[in-house]
Amino acid sequence: MNKNALIMIGIGLVVIILYLLGVGSLFREGNEPMFVAVIVVSLTILYYTNRAKRGEEIYLRPIAGLVALEEAVGRATEMGKSVLFVPGIQDMDQVETVCGLVILGYVASMTAKYEAGLNVPVARSIVMEAARETCKESYLKAGRPDQYYDDMVHYLTDDQFAYAAGVNGIMIREKPAACFYQGKFYAESLILAETGNSIGAIQIAGTGSPAQIPFFVTACDYTLIGEEFFTASAYLSKKPELLGSIKGQDIVKLIGMVLMILVFALNGFNQAGWIDFDITEFITSR
Amino acid sequence: MLMKRQIPLLIVIVVGLITLFGHFIANEGVQNFVDNDSTQWYDIIASFAIFLGGLNLLKLQLLKIYKKQKNWQYSILAVVGFFFAITVGFFFRGANTISVTGINAEKVEQAAEMIAEETGESTSSILSSISDPSADYELQKIYKTHGGAEDFSQKLEAYGETQIEPIEWGAHLSATRGETGSLFNWMFVYIFTPLSATMFALLAFFVASASYRAFRIRNFEATLLLVAGIILMLGRVPIGEYIPAWLIGVFFVMGLGALLAPFIKNRKITLGIVAIGSLIFLIIGFTNGWNPAIPGFFHLPVMQEWIFQVPTTAGARAIMIGIGLGIVGTSFRIIIGIERSFLGEQ
Image (cartoon, rainbow over all chains, first blue to last red; front, side, top):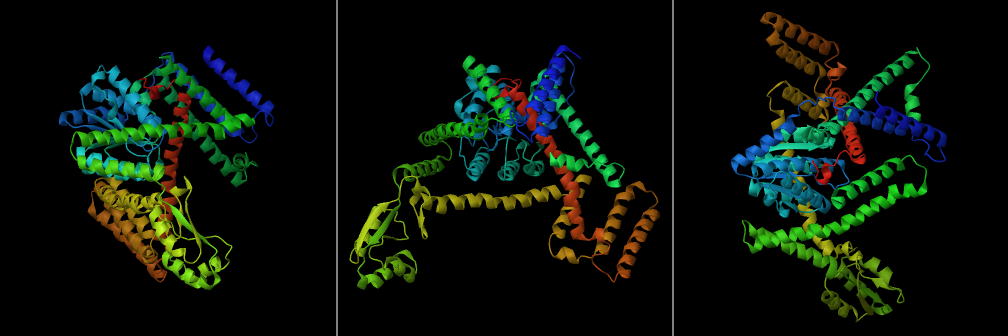
């Protein structure tokens, strides 16, 4: 175990001791399980981030939806058509929108490289400014600042269905060859994806809205389901610290699975009368 | 670089940490910042940012008209709509009310009838309101123009004193009296709401076309989806109650036979499995007087409930846990500053 890991564990222990000493006066009562969870998750992610930084190779399984991003932009270039990117209908306070803009950065660098047109209609003004900055940087880094213009990212409306109508209009009129839906979506997801499907565009969706995933799976060629969408940044950048954090995240998931099995088993033992400890009461009473 | 990278990153890290630890620290100031101040700051910034969006929209539409680009005619509608909404929101209230007082006791009935005809209210309710000559009665109608209000006000002056009052700025946006509203309200109710409803209604057709594509039998998964979908749809409607469980059992055995057929070379064995299985379900049906609810598990309402409660919930929770961890992981990466892609860094 290296020095950094020991320091992190030390900091974690100090925080936990401080917490235990100061419950009620300094720390809020009743939030202990959440606090422990935050510390465990943070330390695990930090530990694996450090390991990756030190050069440990991290394997990330191929994600078809992310691999297909370049294929879709390439197809649009070959057909001489534009690429449509929809970063969801929510503001920058949603993690999904931030992830959507991360993917937009990579899509923009590809459209810059292949000299394909990019159209980004947005539903929030702050997202418009952030998306412009992202695209500008991507075009600059791709060595094609001349191709960038502010209006490739443009505002439509804040209203959900008016936005859906606006984007559908763009699809029907311009017939983009590739449509990307990456962000937070609600009921408009199927309206957008079905219209995209009707114009024969290659479609790649990604969202953290569980209710919209089935719609995207049905109507799109590729869908980034749940956590795949959040790994996009690490997957596309291949930065070791980001890859490490993804592994840390997976380890947390493993811990969660082990805890689930443990709770299941302990509850079964309690119901069978083998032990006198009700785990469900312990969890729910905290 | 300092203004574009370091300072925004510092703001993100500091505010992120305060918000995260605000859930655990028992301090009123921190609590207040997390629950109120930070969200209000965001709302204020977003309110100012809307000007950028509005101006961008207007600029693009005007350019389209000016350059006579393809479909430029639609942009005229967008610009007209834009200015109409701005005008009725900020410059023209389109909401005037008439108040009447001191109506002569002899003319009360005539005045009530006249007001009832104008506003659509019942004469009796108006009578009870205007019979006291000292009371001030506001008509349950909003006049979109001052001229319109003045016309009726003049007619009403024969019975008592009248006064025309515009509704206050801000309140005019959602002001309604009886079945009438302000001009902004009218635009909202008669233009915006039907258009939104039209878009939402389209969803029904898109669901149908998407379901058709999803239910097409292409592979094992699509078949499973189709079967589960049929069970759910039938199980949730009244007719599902009356489809006999033993019949569903026979279908189940046939389906099982179709699945096993490719793996069993001797067709007689497959036929035997299907025949014996079907016979078992027929015997169960016969011995129970063809009761549609027996055997219980093959009763459609029970099956659909099981599908909904067990495999669907399990799958949905697995996705939810993944999404939750993804959000936690991404937020953590942003807070500790290793994720900077949202600042344009790759």
